[in-house]
Length: 438
Image 1 (cartoon, rainbow, N blue to C red):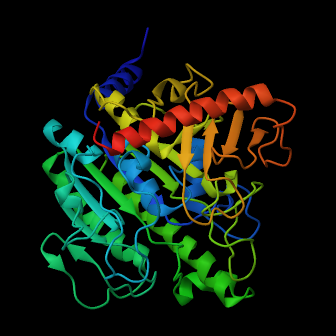
Image 2 (cartoon, rainbow, N blue to C red):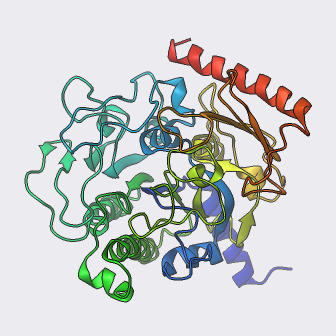
């Protein structure tokens, strides 16, 4: 028989699970899989992310939707691969006011739009990169279901940033100080207001750090002062981001809403640069490739989840997961029928320990310089095919036994490669059909 204390604890947990969970989607920009101390970085300290990995859900095989930022961001909001709606690469990146190449089409259904009829309030904070806030390619957060935003159209400096907008228009002048703190100020204000109303919320917090032009304050650089200045700024920017994630978690605890808040964290792609050197300090861990590449180092990223009401025990997830899985997982948690033709899956059976493998493929496509990889990839639980779907050679890797992609097995397992190539071609044709609005 349960004691009174045990009964009340069980009742509290059940009530929290039945209530609509708050949802936070936090995303770093160009943080590699190895750019956390919990993943073994020997210099960089990320105590908040380390604690999240220790007490929550740690994904060891989590994929960004693409090897560059804008496509991944679209996948996180829609659950669909960005080639289904025509966001092929990073938006214009020559400055905060340069026109966008792409805009998230109005026909795409976002998480914010799904949640609005369920009583949620939603806000976006940080880097948007899915369209402009005015002009021909306008597709602002408020055009896509969000109630408010404090955001930039694309990259800004990570200290004293300039280029933020709200729904009322552009904020002129710089925002003084560390950018991760600047945007978190607004995100926390939004969360506190929602909590005061006892209204469930969706907060999308997309950091600019550690994307170029990466800068850090002297306080955040100080622990790394023995390293080259570029490295100091890079490590310092991640340290500042980690500090703000700690501030966010403390706010949730202070408001007594941490138990029934789904707090997701990931990066939008692997680290910048062709190699880990002083001018490209990002770390892809043991994986081959970096940003823009479809090798694992370009798309396998650090990822975490905390949701104590539903997932009270820490776990390490070995199954493949993706930013495209946010939408179907959130829908499943709320008992909502997900939109049709999603590329992501509901992760709850994996998170609950009822299934060990994904059992659903992941497709990728990119354009431009892919830093030595082919431009398409098809990943099943064990196998990964890289292909251009033309006469150039394909590559096949066994990710369970060779996650660093050192041994190409295309000659040894040609029949598996042939089967995966057919699946990849069918998926690509499906994406092309989706872009036509079919």
